[in-house]
Image (cartoon, rainbow, N blue to C red; front, side):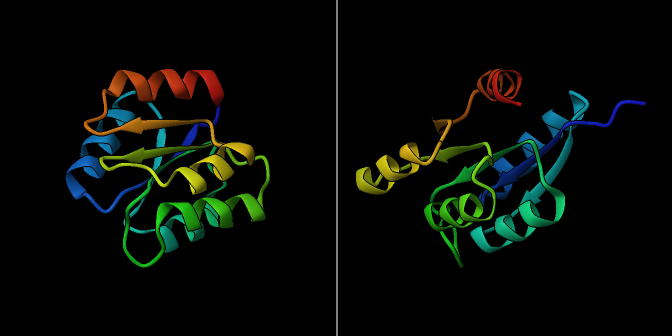
Amino acid sequence: MTEKKKILIADDDLDVLESTQYMLLEEGYEVITANNGKEAIDAYKTHKPGIVFLDIRMPVIDGYEAFFSIKKHDSNAKIVFITAFSVDNQKAEKAKEMGLLDLLHKPIEFEKITKLIQKYY
């Protein structure tokens, strides 16, 4: 029996979180969710997902800080940013230098998520 691919989605927008989780579960993935950056960091360390979709603006710890913390823990972590807002160019540039895979703007087309999973997982 092959193990399901693990995907972590971190977003404080429950509609985005739940709809994306539902669609990925339908596609046969194992989905871990987090509502803020701290939960995302903890979930990454616990579950070691193959790819992470990380909202930038979240409470407790934002997506940038969560990205840097996860990358410090695992430099090979595969992370995609999600945002509905403009991007902090300095932090985004540093993230790209550290291996940020991509940046998706909300509203997210589910097809883009599945293509990124197929490309990078």
